Length: 626
Image 1 (cartoon, one colour):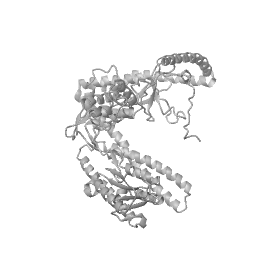
Image 2: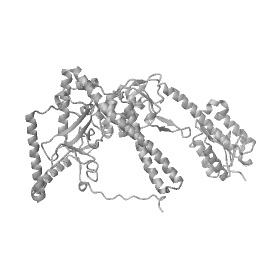
Image 3: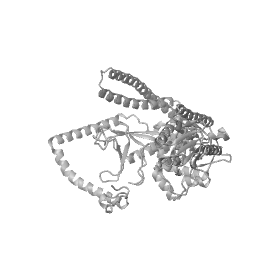
Image 4: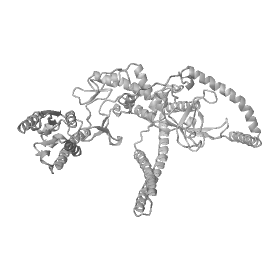
């Protein structure tokens, strides 16, 4: 009876194996295997080949096709030149050999003298380990070459990013003005407060080619042979990647990824492991704009829909007491009066994370910023040397106080971290000696480990702050250049606010419930920190003004005592019930009018107004039916 089974002759050659010379070539392997099969009378020899594929990978097309034949029971024997052709991962090679044994498939490695028909070869496992070691050693040598090239400041990648093109020798990046204009446009939109989704939508509407399409026109990129259904379809993720790239500052960033010699896949590494070479090519974005965009993206996010335009102060306002972000409320008591409140106050249970709302009108903050910028601009123009001197003195005072706090906290955190290490060792010993039950040990260990992780992260940040104290980038000259850029500050745009303002801290009102009161607002500017020009510095009150203020405060105290007495005898409640009934009806009517106006503009719809749809019925495929 004729034997219908085949004898796979498997050949593999990786790029590294090509360096070994002609003896490892595919043609040489085929000739050797064919001659062996003919000499030993092996039935139906059939070639399965993988050319240019690493032995650490087991998703090789030729190998997979051969294993399909094994699974189908159509293989008599497999012939290879040596065991390294099968693979260079000793664990997976061992698994493949076990599969062949279970399927009754004979394995022959000619040069290694392996023939499973003659019994197990005790040296085969060691040979497989050495084959893997060869792959590991080759990978290490290649990494060393790339490391040397990367440390010289040259680009490791063969692809160029959007906004640049290679020079003729493919050694340096040149600015692609067409794409660079789009990159600048994206950063400008981010400075105006647009989020990635909004920017992507705007670019699509403007019919701007997405990066992959643009690069493909120049024969660059990984998608140069791909057909695109919509060449203007920008995505938010593409915009995010552009906004993050330090290469647009003119820097070369190497070692952002790392490959393992087995899977050959790139894995992103932590930013602390990157190597950055500054000013290796022409910059598209300046450092100040890049830093501002990173800060904006790290703050509160803007909503792409909802009320449409993001409020200019969103992402800049913080509570001075708890440090939480403040969020805008666009309507209040039936009026369109944007106000900011502390986000921590409203978290359940109310008032547990922050005792009060710290409510403040957005218009009051914008007016204060504009007044301060006008006063600073006037002061810098009248006496620039004096302005620089006062700014530098303010910086030194602020930085000294801030760094002193950070150093104290760093010492405390490091001390606590040491204590936690001792506690972990102690509970481990107590548990090992039977003094501490396992359940209690696991609970304490998890608690200490969590605190330790938090402390370690905080220590890293504090050490960075302390180390970078002397390299502070704040400077009066840069702030003056920014001031000179604008003629007036009558209208503050999103871009202006993001360029000038670092953060705004809002304190609670001096007397809650009173319309005539004060509320402290701290404005921190980029480059100079918290700076108050002489024209807006608090001045001592005259005796007459102090007396008038005292009388006002006394009157407020009397009114407050009267309120408490009315509240105690129930008169206040009766008045509130009468007044609130009228007030509530009036307020609800105003809210309804605002809601109707917003719904007409398409800002939002209630669920009841959405078109009714019948539930869609799905059908299971026959293969999935039980």
